[in-house]
View 1 (cartoon, chains in turn yellow, blue, purple, cyan):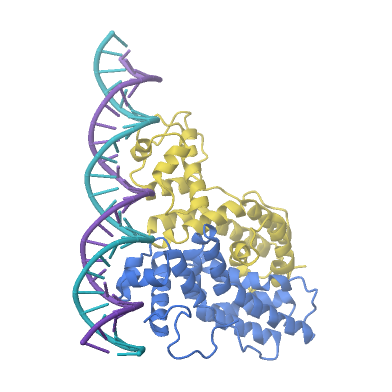
View 2 (cartoon, protein in one colour; view 1 turned 30 degrees about the vertical axis):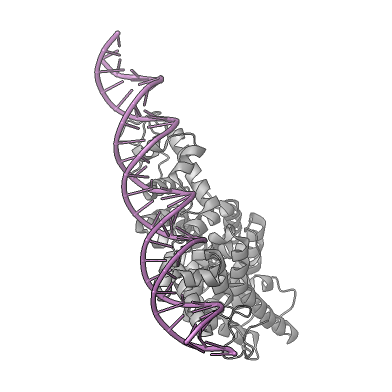
Length: 204
Length: 204
DNA sequence: GTGTACCGGTACTCGACCGTATCGGTACAC
DNA sequence: GTGTACCGATACGGTCGAGTACCGGTACAC
C-alpha cells in the first residue's frame, strides 16, 4: 500500500518524462499544503504556490490539470503511517504512545482538516483524498491496537466504550482549539488518555 | 446579556430608522447562515443572499457595511441558550439531557462551525462572534451543570475527567462526521455519554 | 399636497484568480 | 552541432464577486 518501495533515482510521474525531480515535486506539494493551512483552500492561488516555490505557473499546469487535482495529488503524497510500530505490550501503554504520536502531528493535521473541511463537501475526489491521507490510516492502525488488547484479554470485545476510542481522540484534537484556544500537544493528549480514555475503558 | 427583553413592536436597529422589520432582518440572517452552511463562507455572495431573500443588494449594504460585518451580525442574532432549564436532579440525568439538546442542534451548528472554522483564523471579529454564538454559552451552561454535581456531592471537584467533559462533547460532535460520515444525533450522543463520559467520571 | 428618506433594481468599477498562449532559454539525446 | 522538449516568465482572456452609484417608486410625516 505504501509508496515507500525503492524507485529508480530519476523515475518521475511514471507516464511523463518531466524534468521535475521527486524532491522538487515534493516541494510543490509541501508549499501548497502549507498555504492551505495558513490561508484556507479557497484563498490558495496557483500564482502564490508558483511564486513561493520559484517556479512558473505553467509548470504547475503542465503537471496537473487543475487546482483541485493539484491539491489531491499533494494530499496523496502525504499518506504516512503515524502509529506504525507502536507495540508496548499493554493497551494502556499503546494508547499513550498513540496520544504522543497524534500530538506531534496534531497542529498541522488539524489546520489542514479545518482548512479543507468545507471544500471537501463540494468535491468528492478531494474528500476521498483527505480521508485517505488523514483519517483512514489512523483509524485502521488504532483499530489494530485495540484488537490486540482484546486478544491479549486486557479488555472485553463487548466493552461499550471501545468503539468510541477513535472518535474520542479525533474529537478532542479537533475540539481543543475551539474550546481552549490552543492545539492539542502530546502532553495534553496523554493526560486526556489517562484521565478519560483509560477509565472509560475500565483500565487502571 | 440576552436581547430577549421586550422591545417596542417597531424598534429596529436602535440608531437608524430603517423600514426593515425585526422579522425581515432575521430572514436576512437566516438566509446568510444557511448559505454559509451549504456553500461555505467564501462562496456566499451578497448577491446570492439578496436574491434568496428577494431584497436588493443595496438594502443589505445600507444596513451593514461589509460582508464580514453582515455575517457577524447574523451570528450575534443566533445566540441562544441551548442547555437552559436542564436540571433533572442528578449529574448523569443532566448530562444525558445535555447530549439530547446538543444532538438536536448538532447538524446545523457543526456545519456552521466547519464552514466558518477557517475564515475565523483570518478575521478576529468573526472569530469572537462565532465563539460567543456557538461555544461560550454551551461551555458556561455545562460548567454550571458540572458545578451543581460537585455541590451535590455526586462527584469530587478533583475528579480528573471533569475538566475534559466539554471537550469530549464538542469533540465527538465534530469528529463523528469525519470518522463515521454522519452527524451526531441525540441518540448517538446519549449512548456516548452512557458508554464513555459517565464511566470516565466514575458515575454509574 | 409636499418633502423626506428609505426601498428595489440595475448598471458600473475594480480587483482577483483560473487557466491558456506565447516566447526565449537550455539541458539532453544522438 | 542539431533537434527536441521541457522550463520560467509574462501577458492575456474570461469570469466572478465586493462594493458604489444612480434612479424611479412609495410610504409616511405634517
